[in-house]
Length: 136
Image (cartoon, rainbow, N blue to C red):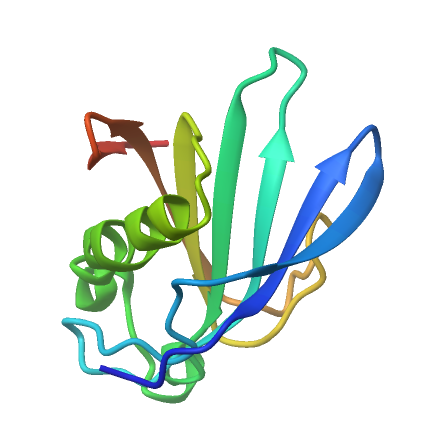
């Protein structure tokens, strides 16, 4: 696996982004596809219904360089949820209802259109310490 290091956690509260150090994530985790990737950012989001979401946004340049299709990376999503997201939540004493993992071929600003980027997303419900896939 890659090097362990703390990374920045951005929290949105009432439209304001707050930063805090978060432990437990690997900057460059080894994934089943064997493709190189790195963590662009981690975001906690509280939705209007008070449910909480952890977003882990990764960059994998090979998506456009190889190029890779979703099927080439499908196993990476549950792996990142189970091995990274759950560890982050445990180590930081956080609870969320959903984890969203994204893989993009380049860094993109969160919440802004990026039509030039190739991005894949998967969502997981967190239940009893496990990630349960929720198809979009």
